[in-house]
Length: 70
Image 1 (cartoon, rainbow, N blue to C red):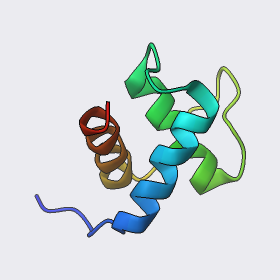
Image 2: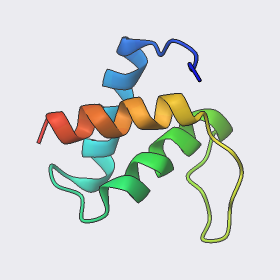
Image 3: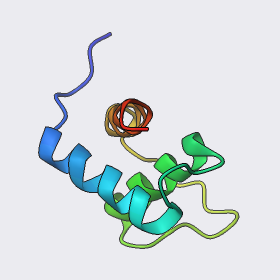
């Protein structure tokens, strides 16, 4: 199963947003990455019970980049 190509400049932008919101070492990196991807897709940071879908390929790319940039 092969996903859609992910725009590397968008990934860089979202990792920067992650750092802006949560600092250099977020305590729950998976959740925080999901939050910034959710904000990108839906225009708002999710509420506690917001379970709308996000682009999984983009989420995984942001998570990988955030882990590499620690």
